[in-house]
Amino acid sequence: MIYLDHSATTPLHPEVLAAMMPYLTTQYGNPSSLYRLGQQARQAVENSRRRVAARLNAAAPREIVFTGGGTESDNLALRGIALARQAEGRQLITSAIEHEAVLATMEALATDIGFDLTVLPVDAQGRLRVADLAAALRPETTLVSVMAANNEVGTVQPIAEIGALLRRHTAFFHVDAVQAGGYLPIDVQAWGVDALSLSAHKFHGPKGVGLLYLRRGTPLHSPVTGGGQEAALRSGTHNVAAIVGFAEAFELAQRERAAKNQRLSALRDRLVAGLLAALPEARLSGHPTERLPGHVSLLLGAGIAADMMIAALDMAGIAASSGSACASGRNEASHVLRAMGVPEDEALSALRLTLGDGTTDVEIDQVIAQLPPLVARLREVAL
Ligand code: PLP
Figure 1 (cartoon, helix red, strand yellow):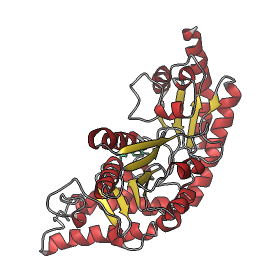
Figure 2 (cartoon, rainbow, N blue to C red; figure 1 turned 30 degrees about the horizontal axis):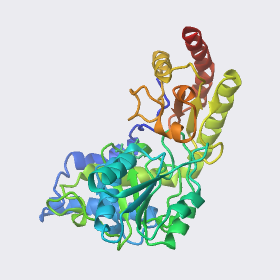
Figure 3 (cartoon, rainbow, N blue to C red; figure 1 turned 180 degrees about the vertical axis):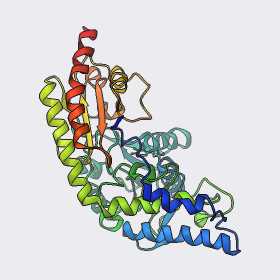
Figure 4 (cartoon, helix red, strand yellow; figure 1 turned 45 degrees about the vertical axis):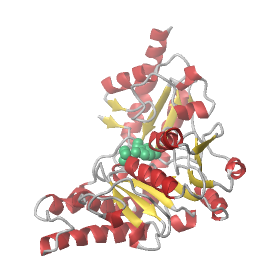
């Protein structure tokens, strides 16, 4: 199989599995227990916290809260900050191309609790205009959430510029950096963020573990109550092996980032050029340069149904997706492409090919050779 769906998830790195193994076998203590086995597990959690805090340039390890993944981190940040600050104001701002973990949470805060939600538009390449955000800010704005990189089209947002704008405002700034975790240099101080979500399975770590960076002094009412773990912000017995795996995977991804990004962008550019040369009706969606290094998102052209294309590619041994994994299965244009102004019939032809550590030159050649005839066949069927 040629796996080209690394934005959906990535295989576990063997070194990550090796680092996790003791905590899945002999080191099974509960970090809250006082005897040695428990304290060794606690040390593993705290050591992981120190490692990721240093990589993120956080001011202190206690600014890191381990969670059960990206969705949970987004929920914790948005609900937690909005509710903690509701006496100061009730306007929330986000962008139209956020992941559902942010959009649905913001919408729930608006419809269930009565917050005033502003959803900012993006341009045709999926970039937020900072001037639009500046114009939408009001004294009662308490929280702004903008993703670092988009999962469907790979566009990277001007996060440091937004952070600089929000430094002059009392609103808190949350960033969903789930897709960016393995590829962008994430510096929470340089970016000027108050809260930031990451998820390990997007950079060759285990599934079901994430983190929320929370700048010291950021108010947060946690909806999770219980034993008081993670400074009472995320109660529940720590998933020690997964937390150790998170830290190891993040370290590997960030340490080797420059070389990997160079290799991935070269493969990506070759794939895009090869496919567009053979498919005159197709075009690249998202930003041409401000995009994730291994991310290819194509609009194959009106009349080509993406779900048929995914099935045909699967038969040919190629794993791809039609946009976000969560949204596939629904036969409607993605909210991201709609927000970018892509016409409905063209948006239904969206194909996402995302490259990763294991992707080879030979695989790219095979996809360039195999994909265009499949599109031609689907076009014949559609006529
Ligand atoms: N945010 C973005 C941008 C994502 O791409 C995803 C996963 O696809 C998530 C959040 C959710 O992360 P998780 O799968 O860890 O819940």
